[in-house]
Image (cartoon, rainbow, N blue to C red; front, side, top):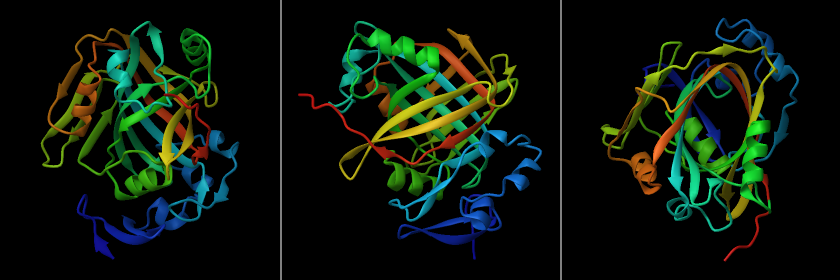
Length: 308
């Protein structure tokens, strides 16, 4: 066993498709390898209800990170999202030609800065953040406003992620090799409570990459299963397009349009560079889920239209 440099906990080594990573000794991944005992999770005071997961069946699949079970279960999560307007022209410079930006008006697209805290998860605690672009579903024709209206009505949106730093090595290897996401490990602190929501992402030197802080919007509690949203993310694995679906069981959430008092700071690093390249105009909404659950499915191959 070795000592974790992050928190000095004992760790064990695990093999993920030929990559050796350290995970907490006695943690959920060490003990269950994704086949976590839901009865034990239900007794965790941070979680409680696990009916959302009992309705889902895990399947064993081969993947670039070796044999694994899907979906990956996140039993207690908190999330924050800053939704921004940006010029479509700037967005197109960062999108692969196969994808089209989702526009709310001609020449005006949607981008976001997101932060996630996973307190109880099949692969143990970690945090992550993202800069993403809202895109139209693959191979959808017709007016983009139809896709926007349908996505908002059904809470089913599609995205392309430019940067996705994480705080743990297992999350980085699984996310990069297994899902095709642009993940790297860095210092990353995400905090969400009923009063305040904040995130700070460090660059390679430990200095500021990106940070934001705001008052948490008033939260509305929901019963498990009452509000389940989906997010489809597009990535390439071995030069082939894949779609990854996340199902979010929202248990407590709130939103604030045109949030006042938002403190967004850009420093020097990949996230700030990605956000600057999109030329954001303004933040139009802050969404915070103080309590939720998540099922992350393994990516599946998908076809994309050929575009010049």
